[in-house]
Structures are given as structure tokens and as C-alpha cells.
Image 1: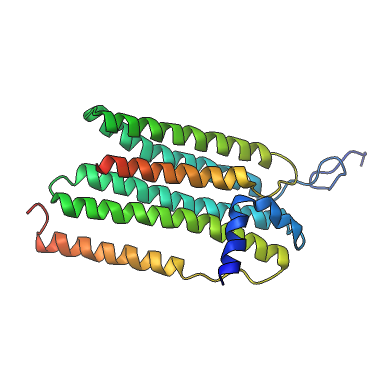
Image 2 (image 1 turned 120 degrees about the horizontal axis):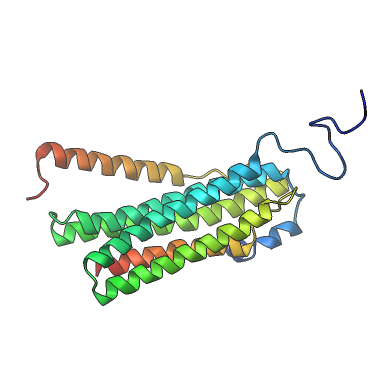
Length: 113
Length: 132
């Protein structure tokens, strides 16, 4: 047998791949969450297109902004997950997500008016 | 009690303070906790979508009933979102301290609410009350 790292053997430069694929599962969870958010925003967009009253249009725009903000939050977190030992979420991630959901609830409230 | 709530709420806004105590757990546990957080966020988002859908598509219902259902769903979304952050912070802190994970009644409340809503819908459909 010649030298060279055997697959799965730990090396100092690159820690072994996590067999549970935890970072991948976590970034997929972020993707699922942005997709779920897109469903709500698409609903508001549909309402705004059907009945373009000013309040519905403003609500749909706000919803779209919240979706973009969630997308950026997810993007930032996925960048953080790409490291070999990802740290925990920071305030930007938890609060960003919470604010996006609350804005969407506000959008839903505006639709009721 | 109030003090404990204040400390936890401060952690919502500054989760980096969690690092001040305990030891860092295996990152895989933190990632699992993060996915649970995201699952609760998705629940909240689904409730928002439900609220908007009820208001826009159940136009046969009376205005009061429709708006009432939508408001209940939207309020549930707010609760789920706050609970997501709160539970994430508490689990993360418990893991750092090596304590048991916090027990919570919230899933039971949400499950009961969902079951109650489903029974209500069954009753409305079976009795043919919809659209009157």
C-alpha cells in the first residue's frame, strides 16, 4: 500500500466529513423555510394582482421585502454553515427570521382590512 | 420568575451571550436545535398562509366568522414565532450547561388547537352549515 490519506481517515487539514450530513440538512431546512415564506408572499401577490387596491399592493410589497430579508438571512447562515465547525446562530439570524415572520403577520393583518 | 424571563428575553436579542457560560456542545446538537427552530418558524409561516387563505378564499362565510378565523391563525403564527426563538435559546443554554432540555406544554396546546379546528371543520362539513 502506498501512502496518501485513506478515505474517512481524519487529517489535520480537513476534519472528517460529518457522516450525519448535519450542515447539509440544516441548510436544506433554511431553504425549506424560505420556500414556505414564498408561498405566503405568493398568496398576497395574487390578492394584490386580483384587486389592486393601494393597501393590498403595499402589503404585497412589504411581504416581498420580508421574503428578500429572509433569503439574505438564510444566505448568511448557509455561508456560516460552510465552515468545518459551524458555530451557533447569532442575533442577526434569530432576530432576522423573527422579524420577517412578524412582518408577514402584519401583511396578513393588512389583508383583513 | 420575572428576573428569569428578563434574562431569557435578553438572550433572544444577544444569543452570543450564551457563550459566556458552560461549554460548547458538539456542533451537531446545535445544528439539530437550529433545525427545530426552523421547523417552528415554518409552522408559523404556514399559519400566516392559512390566515391569508381563509380571508381570501372562504368568501362564502360571513365577514365576522372569516375575519375571526384569520385573526386566530395569525395570532397563532405570532405565538409560534416567539416560541421558536425562546425555545431555541433555552435549549442552547441547557446544552451548554449540561442540563436537561426544557420541557414545554406548547406542542400540546398547538396540537389541541389543531385537533379542535379539525373537529370544527368536520362538524361544519357534515352538518352542511357552510355557505349559509
